[in-house]
Length: 355
Ligand SMILES: [Zn+2]
Image (cartoon, rainbow, N blue to C red; front, side):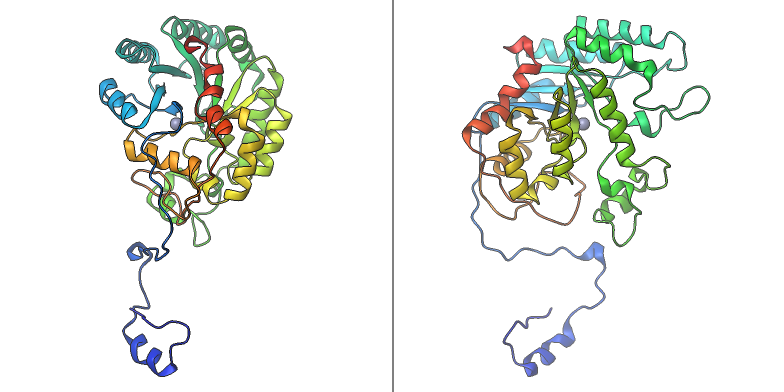
C-alpha cells in the first residue's frame, strides 16, 4: 500500500511505493471512504409512508407487516408479477392479511396477444382484477423491447390496437404504471466506459445496446400513449426512466399533466446529483411517489428515509445484492410539506379506497 501523501519527501515515496500493488483487478478493488461525515440514522420515517412500488409475491404478508411497523411504513402496494388465477389469489392473500396495509397492482397479461379479440380479453381480465381489489395495472419493459406479434414483429408501445385498454383504464379509474426501457447505461456497449460495467458484466442479458430501438424511441412511444389518453392516470416507474436527465424528466412532466413518477430504485441517480434533485423535488412535489422496488428490510427503508430527510453526505444508496455503479449519494433534506406529499398524499390520490 502506498502511504505517501502531498508534502511527503521524494525519498520517502520511493521508499514505500515499491510495495504498492499496481495491477489490482477491478473485482478486488473495494475502496473504503476515509471521509468523516455526519451520520443521521432515521429509524422511522418522519410521516407515515406508502411504498407505491414493491414486489411481495415471494414474501409472507405477516413478515412484511412486521418490517413495515418497525420503520413507519403504513402501506405497501404489491405489484404482483403473476397473471391469471395466480394473480387473483395473490391479491386475495395480501388483502385478506391486512386490507388497509396492502394494495395490489396487476401485471399486464400478454398471453393471447395474437388473437383478434385480445383487447376484449384484456378488458375482461381487468374487470376480474378490479373485482379482487386491484388498484392499477403495470405494463413492463417487455413491451417495446421484446414482445412480438404472431408475425414476429416487435410490438410498439404506441400500437393503436391497445388504445381501448388505456381508455378503459381511464374510465375505470385504474392508474397505468409503465416501466419502459431501462437505465441509460443498459443501452450502451458493455465496455470500459460503461458506468455500470460491473453490473452489466455480471448480467450481460440486461444490456440492450445491440437492439435496433433506442431508449429515447421507447420513451417517446410511451409518451405518445400518455398524451393520447389525457383522462387516464399514468405512473412512470423509476423516474419514468429519466433519472439520469432531470431536465428531460421535467420536460415530460410539463408536457403530460396526467403523468406521475415513482422514485423506486432510483436513489443512486437522484442522490448523485443532489442540487438538481432537490430542486426537482421542490418543483414537482405533487407528482412524485415514494417507492422502493427492493424487498422490504428495515435497513433498506431507513436508507431511503436518510436520503430524503437528512443532509448526510456520501453514503451508500439502498440496494440488495448487485450495486448499480461505483458512486455514493447525498441526502436531500426535503422540507416537511414535500415529504408529506411524496411519502403519502400523492399516493393516496391513486388509492381512493384508503381515503
Ligand atoms: Zn419493480
